[in-house]
Amino acid sequence: MDEKTQRYRRRVNRLNAIVVLLQRIGIAVGPIYLLTVPGRRSGKPRTAPIAVVPIAGGRYIVQAHPRAAWVANARNAETAELAHGRRKSTVRLVDVPVEERRPLLREHIENSPARVGRLFVSSGLVTEPTPEAVAAAADRIAVFRVESA
Image (cartoon, rainbow, N blue to C red; front, top):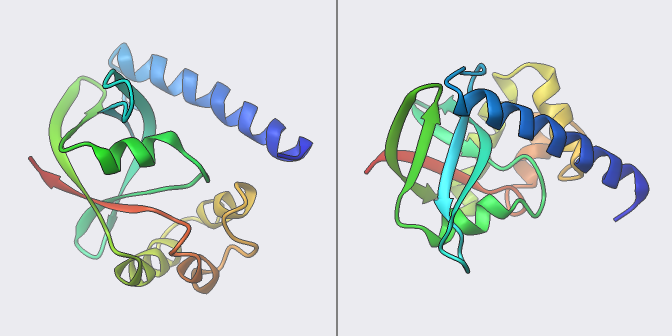
């Protein structure tokens, strides 16, 4: 990992820690939820701040950082907990197949502020913040549909 990526990752980790702290004391932070799933190896609860986004009439979680541990944990878990401020719910996360991700990712970028597309560039998942570039990277970007458990 190069120095620029390491600095970016450290900054993201610091911000995530602040978001987790605020959420745990009951302060909802925009569209950010706390996702808690059992660790795939330890079985211990692992929590990560994520955004739940409305796309195509459903609710989805889109991976924004490569090698995010929550992705592997979510793929291994039967259910997960989503918390937003003081509200908590148990959900199922359905891993969307790659070909179905493409139109979802395209719509997500088309209907989001420009900073969302730039986030995919900053994290190294794509080289351009365009709907086409993000959709083309569907094999590298996990997308989960959020369903009631």
